[in-house]
Length: 233
Length: 50
Length: 255
Image (tube, rainbow over all chains, first blue to last red; front, side, top):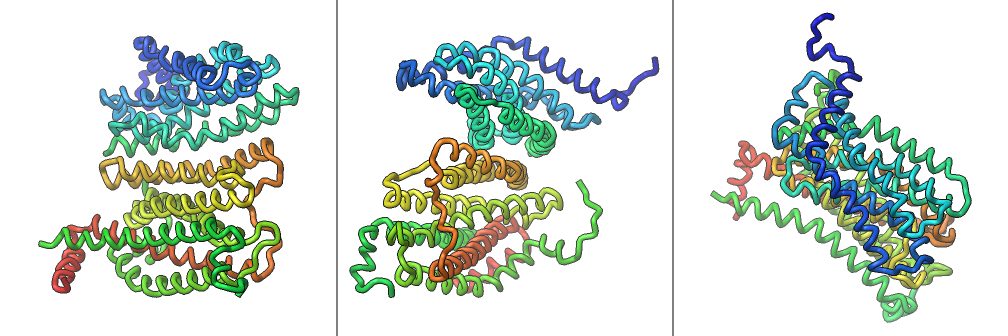
């Protein structure tokens, strides 16, 4: 086997290595992984407490509440995406490495989704049951979250990249990213409401898929640009 | 002139308050966007008086 | 990132802050007079001479503020994004400063469009706010403006603040069609089609001529405010350069 220099590594090897690194780091801090999930549960609990626990009311708003809670939980976890790497200097190393930054970024976001968006999606049926979501809407909820949460992670990462050098970065991410989340929210909840009404959801899933595809292609470029700007300041 | 008298112009068939408030807000915002940079220019030259 | 395209010389001249300062100084009087005249004529026409709407009565006159403001708010965002892109690609300081000036300007105009839209809604549909597609889209546009403006003011380094804002405004630009489409779709789902703040499709000339004059007047105002804001930004950023120092001295003699 010939000696491979860093630049000889194939792109998929680089992706895999970055992914493994981030998942390992997350595992070492696994207590931190729970907070967004608890937050997710808590936000959903606020609605019956703050408005009304009537099944009739809750079943109407369940789709929206679960989606909004997922959105907010994702935002909550976004700040930590780059911060620890920024603080210990490994982010700068990533910028200087010969590997394409966009690829490293995709791997990081993928890892982030696996520890935030994916658990949220898995937990969503629990919330849906608590909020009396009609059973017809359940599969739509899971599917839309499955397709939507990666998009949320990608867009959120743009905000994280832009604010990683700032002290109040966490709150700022919310401000920058929430308007961009709105289409995903609209189509995600729209699909669940359509499914509840017995209508097909293939169109919604297609739109969400298209938005995800657009995000996968364009967001890493924006994130990479944002990181270069943040690190250079 | 569409209106027969000045008081009719002010009243706007009952909608006077809405219309005039809108035009007043517009004036305020347009003026702000002119006065604000002018003030900052003045501040700049004043501040750099050496 | 270097570009090997052959840009004409005047393009790079645009990048000189001093050149922009000089030429904007020459353009300001003309645009100011144009803005003043157009807006004056437009407002008088809109308030006193244009006919009232058949259904909405005189509250229809708000359209002469609301529509120009809405158009301007959207154009300003596009301009901000394009200026940002130019500053990122060609590293042009002037483009960066223009983009920074667009943010507060566009945000306040968006507020104007929202306020007039809301006030217009009260006599028309009896509510101070309606979640119709265009007003909701304008609200989201305001959020996008606030995001860019916050980046401009929070990032400490001036250069990086402009660059970060440019990246965000470009991301926003790509998103705007998606947001508009999704909000319109959402709106048709939840509200009957009669709920629109749009002007009637076929407007008689007594109505669209003053509207056009107001739109032109707003654009001239935009040019004036943008130039004024950019000039302040230039003075501040170039304060150590010789020509600004000279200007300061000249001003002192006047004071």
